[in-house]
Length: 250
Image 1: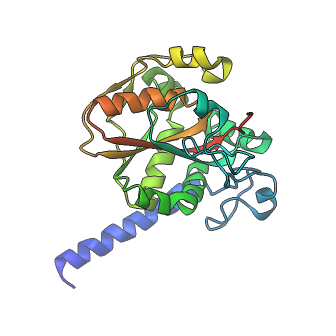
Image 2: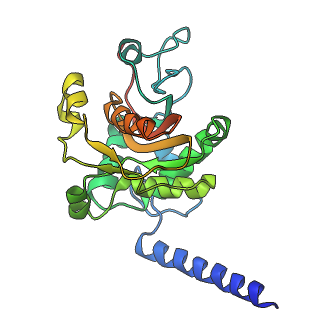
């Protein structure tokens, strides 16, 4: 065996060992019931009946499910323009999904990220290719909040999604410059104001079509604020993908 093949074999071995160690520290769990599962199972069979998958018809802008197939946009997107080109989401933001994302964000359930990402890649991998997306970028946390929590859940999700889709992940191109209030406590106008100037470009990504990744889509204010900074930094188009999204109320 040549030296290059020998070193390559050792790298594969250490990568495998690293993965096994992570499985021991953070064993794969169903993100809905939180029970340990096999890595290939993801969301367990019983829990798939408890969640609502986003399907067509959905808003052509934000991806929110709509009841009328003849409508192109949800009521929010008909009233408000967005800075991102198009968005997608996995599941409707209902009881079990709310609990799942809460544990992912605040109870150190980092292992959920691999399941969310696998579901995203399966549902929207072809869409990502169709849109010729070149890189994945997570919505950043404010530095103080990230230190307190110990991790950025969107970054975990983005890294795993990038790995599955074989796309580079830019974790240092966008920074959060302000500690904002939780968006869920605010109305639409307050949310827009809350994230105004909340982001800045740390450096140019070198890519023209970016996929922003976040956990929850509500009004799109956070994505718009981040997308606006990226567009000003030279990105041509910004797309978005989230774990969950609300129902159209129009």
